[in-house]
Image: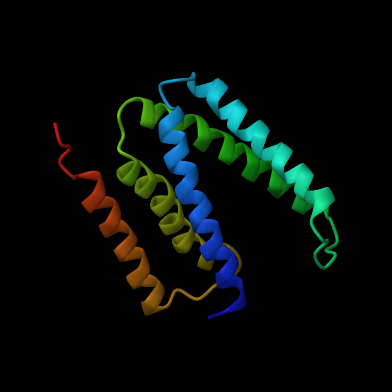
Length: 145
């Protein structure tokens, strides 16, 4: 297994917990306040980790790096509010999570070759098709009454 995959797999566990806990909170707090609490807590956790965890290999901070990070943060803020809304409106965790995360990953997999020169291989094409298939299958699942 590639070294980066351990962090990715651990991250997937946290994303699963995130969606489950977000579903538990939805309908019990307003969408924007819930997103604010979620993002504020995330910022606090990152701040604590910044001071407590060992430092990684230093990377030069550039203006572009900061601007892209800000833009990414704004995207995550929008996702948080939209997730609270979707889950409050009754979206099942499996469907909502698959559409948001799977759709985002599928979209990024299609854009990465254009922006970063990553190869669009038959394997990537299969992954994109499977991602779209998962979205279709789980978003059209009949909900139990």
